[in-house]
Amino acid sequence: MSKKPFYPGLAVVTGAGSGIGRGTAKALAALGAEVIVADIDLDSAKDAAAEINSRRGTAFAYRLDVADTPALEAFAAQVKATHGVPDVVVNNAGILVGGPLIDVPLRDFQRITDINLMAMIHGCRVFGAQMVERGRGGHLVNVASMAAFAAAPYTGPYSIGKYAVKHFSDCLRAEFAQHRIGVTAICPGLIATNLSNSMKADGILDAEQSELTRKLMLKGQALFGMHPDKAGQLIVRAVRENRAVEPIRPEARIAYPLTRFAPGLVRFVMTQAGKRDITRLRDTVAGPQAIARVERLVDRIPFRSGNGTDSADGTLNTKVGGAV
Ligand SMILES: NC(=O)c1ccc[n+]([C@@H]2O[C@H](COP(=O)([O-])OP(=O)(O)OC[C@H]3O[C@@H](n4cnc5c(N)ncnc54)[C@H](O)[C@@H]3O)[C@@H](O)[C@H]2O)c1
Image 1 (tube, rainbow, N blue to C red):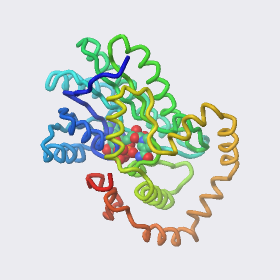
Image 2 (image 1 turned 120 degrees about the vertical axis):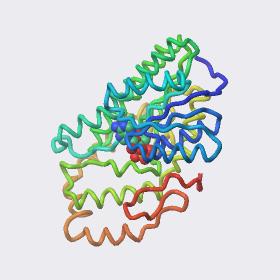
Image 3 (image 1 turned 90 degrees about the horizontal axis):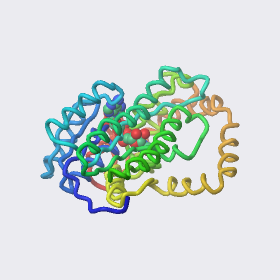
Image 4 (image 1 turned 90 degrees about the vertical axis):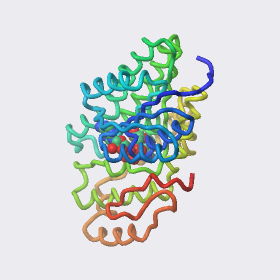
C-alpha cells in the first residue's frame, strides 16, 4: 500500500490515560480526529479526554480492560454503534513484567501475554473486521518496543509479546494491504511514562526492593526518556507515511539494523550481560545495607522539567506539555 493522505475522522487509542497512548491521542486529536480514549483506569481516561476537549479537540473516555476479550468485543461494538467505524486504531495498552525465567510466576507471564500480545491481536481482529466490512481502508497501529528485536536477558516475559506483536503486524500488513488497511509496529526505546508503575518482578525482588527499583526506573525514564507527546507525534507521522516499522529514539534506531545485520555480535553482548549474576547485582543495588543509600540518591534525582512531577506516589505527570 502506498502513502496516502491522512485525515483520520475517528481514532481509538487503548491505554490512552497515560504515557505514549495519551500522547498519541493528543496528536491524533490535533489533526482533527474524534478520539476514543480507552483505559483500564477510567479516571485517567477521563482526565486525558478532558485535556483534549479543553484544547478544542473531541474525545470520549471509556473504561476498558483490553485483556477481557468479551469486554473488548462489546467495546468495539459500542464504538461502532455510537461513533462509527474508526479510521485509526492504536493498540497501545501494556504492562511490564521481568526477571529470571525460572522465578517469574506463571500467572504474571500469562497476564502480560494477555495484555501485551493477545489484546493487540484481538484489537486488530475486531476493529480490522469493521474496517474491512466498511471498505474504506484504515490504519492499525500496534505499540511493540525495541525489545521486539533486542533480546536481552531477564526481559523474556516482556520481549516475547513485543517480538510477536511486531511479527504479527508484518503478517497483517501483507494480508490487509488488499483492503487498503495499513499496519504499523511501533518500536520505542526509552519514553518518559508511568510504565515502571506496572512493573512486576515477584520472583526476584521483595516488596521493598520492588518499590525502590520502580522509583529508580521511573526517575530514569523521566530523566533520559523522550517526552510521550513527542512519541505520539512520531507515531502519527508513521501512520501518515504508512511505515511498516517505526523505531523511536536513537537506541531503537541503532538496535533495529544491528540485530538484523550483526545478530552474532548482539547475541555475544547479550550473553555476556546474561552471565552477570542478577541476584548479586540486586543485592549490591537493593540489598539491606545499600537500600537506604540508593533511596537517598533516588530522592535527590530531580524529575526533568516538563516530564514529571514530584507527586507523593512518584507518578509522572504526563499531562504537562513542555519539553516536547
Ligand atoms: N515507556 C517506554 O519506555 C516504552 C518503551 C517501549 C514500549 N513501550 C510500550 O508502550 C505502551 C504504552 O506504555 P507507556 O510506556 O505509555 O506506559 P503507561 O503506564 O504510562 O501507560 C500504559 C497505559 O495502559 C493502561 N493499561 C494497562 N493495562 C491495561 C489493560 N489491561 N487494559 C487497558 N488499559 C491498560 C494503563 O492504565 C496506562 O494508562 C506499552 O505497550 C509499552 O509496552 C513503552
